[in-house]
Structures are given as C-alpha cells and as structure tokens.
Image (cartoon, rainbow, N blue to C red):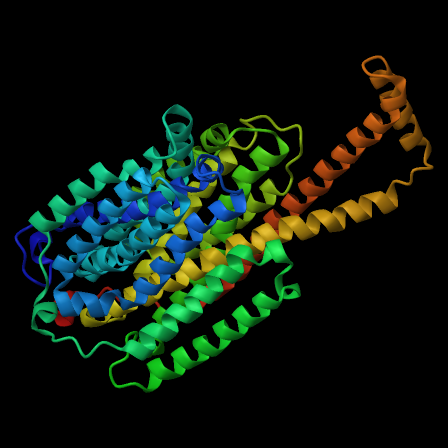
Length: 523
C-alpha cells in the first residue's frame, strides 16, 4: 500500500506531511509545559508573589488540560476533528500571548486556564490523526515522529526556557508559542482532513454528569499533588477533604462511564488487553521518567549551585539521545517484536538510573554526559513501542476515544511521579540527616577536630566570638548537603527498581499482528 493511500480518508496529502503538521501542535503544547518551570521564580518576582503562589501557573494549566483530554473525542465528533484541532491551536496561541502580556498574577492564571483548555486536546487529536494516517505496519515510524514532540520537547524546554528568561524575559517563554502555533494551524488547515467515520458520525448529547465528575476528581488530584507536600499531606484538614472529594468523584466517574449509554469517556476500550496493559505501563512510565527528568536538574541546581540555564545545558544531551533513537526505533518497530524493544528500553533506563545513584558532590558537568545521552536514547525505546503496541488491536473508530484516555493516564502518572519525587527528596533528606547525626556524635574526635579547624580558620576572618557559631553553621550546611545527596540517590535507585518491574509487565502485551491487509480491513 502506498503511503498516500494509507489514510482512511483517501487523502492526497502524504502521511509524512500530516505527521509533521500534527507533531508541531504537540511539540508546542509539551514544550510550553516544560519551558515555564524554569521561569517560575522570575514570574513570582515580577508579579510580587511568592514562589508557592507562582506554582499555580503550572497547576491551573494542568487542571484545565486534564479535564479536556478525555473529552476531546466528543468535541472532535461534534464539531469535526480538523476544525476542532485548528480551534484548539488558535486558542492556545492567543492564550500564550495573553499569558506573556499579563500584568498581574490573577490575569496570568486566567490566561493559563484558557491555554490549558486549548492545549488539552492537542495531544490526543494529533495522535489519533497520525495513527489513522498510516497503516499499522508503518505506525512505529509515524510514532517516532510524534515521539519527537512528546519526548524531546520536555528535554529542550528547561534549556530554552532558561535562555529566554535570562536573555530577554520570562514573558518570552510564552511568546515563543506564537510563531509555532501560526505554522501549525496553517499546516493542519492545508493538509489534514477528517476521515469518513468522523464526518458521518453524529455525536451523542454532551455528558454533563461525566464531565462534571471528571473536572472534580482531576482538579482535586492535581491540587493535592501540587500542594500536599507543603502542608504535610494528610496532616492538613483541607487535604483530607480534597482526597475524599477525589475518591468519591473518581469512583462515581468510573461507574458512570461503564453504565451510561453515551458516556463522555468510553472506558469499555480498556477491555482490549493490549490497550489496558499499555495504560498501566504508561502510568508507570510517567512515574519513573518524569520524576527523573524533574529531579536531575534539581540535583545540579540545589546541590551543585548551577543556574537554571546551566542546569538545562547539562541535561540537554538527553535530547540528542532521543533524536538519534527516533529513526532507529522507527525502523526496528516494523521489523521486531516491540516487546523486545520495550524490554531493552526499560532495562537501559533502569541501569542508567543506578548509575545516577552513584552521584556525589564532586562531579563535573561532563561526568554524567553519556548516561544522560543514553537515557534519551532509552526513552524513545519506551514511549514509541508502548504507544504503537497499545493501539495495535483497536479499530480506527476507537482510536479517538482511546487516545484521550491514554494521554490522561500519562499525565496523571507524570504528575504523581513528580509529586512523589519531590516528597521523597524532602522526607528522605530528613531521614538521612537524622541517621548521619546519630552516627557522627559531637563528642567524636573527628568532629571535634573539624570544628576546631573551622573555628580557627574563621577566627582569622571574623570576630573570635562568632567563629564557633560560624563553624557550627558551616558543618550543619555540609550535613544538609550530604543528607539531600542521599535523598537524590534514593530517588534514582527506586526509579531503577520501577523500571525493572516494568520489564516484566511488558510481556503481558499480546504480540503485534501487522498482517497484510489489516489496514484496509480496519478502515
């Protein structure tokens, strides 16, 4: 089957042009999520707010994004997928300008909610269009292109965001979306067309109850994950109420989606074994990968004193590894059982996580260069095969709904992973500080020698009366650094264990069946 004939709608446009068109939209949305992280301190300072208040710039976006994700299929059927995708790109682009021009934090949060709503549908719609534009045996190569947006954008984001913020202003972290959005809207309008089943299908009445329950449980979950550590989780009354709201709304949402005639999200797609296993692995993928991507720059910033831009430069080579792997995985995905590729990806990522677990405070910027490159390479061997294998046994008309569910569980897994990593850094640091304090008693000869040497050194710099206090403060700072270092080590090693667990779960997949003629039958 020729590439031009692989599309279900029989479009004249080459599927690879379609792939680039929808990848631009995905790249823009994912890049924005990552690029804003490094600008938060600057946003807080510019808006005369605390860093804690500025984190709502992330939370408000993620909540709106998560609510729209599963609902994207209904909107696509109701308004037409191409029209809805272009509308979302336009909304996202205009909201990006409003974010950059916002004069106050409240207006910035409002613009971020609108931006999150516009960006929520970009990934599932782009993924559905891409998968349907290629016959199953070529979807691995297509997903390699899509994976460029999903895997590489979060890696480039901190570096680009740090450079824009340091060189110009944090506002340019939003303005950069404008040219990308204009180009994406033009290409989608020019090259993408709706398949026949989308044009011929009438959307059912909007599921108000399902949408309301979805908004409640995703909103509660995101707020808990974002703010829980700051208030000692369930030690705060409002967290207990929020968790109760999340649990009740989530259970009711599941029951409603299983029993309703035309639910907003059709969870019956989870009856497909490959898709269900793929969703499970995608949650775990989010847990281990997003936590590592978040924690490694923090290691360089908090322990080694790197700036946001410098830390972004250090982890940037991960993007090189991912880019190199994309054509390789695209080629191998059509030749080999993807379960072997997934096993290889998780194995390599787990081994490299163990290497990260050997970090110390004396490493140079180049010490972890090759491990960082290899993690990018391994990421491609995880994300692309999981996606292609998950959709392998689904019919084309199921892909739109399945894509919303799939991207939702990935976002939830990533949010949980980031939150757990931050929590473990805080708590394990306290544990290790207590352990070190118990091991190194103040009466030990080594401690007394160290405090005497520091007191003598500082006595030549400050008044002798303050030298002892300064020496104790210096040693306490060193204690905190060592404790935090071991907390980072714990997170890296636990990530490795999770990767090895995923290696076993990979084999719950049924083998892919790219038989000749399957694409035509699916259409």
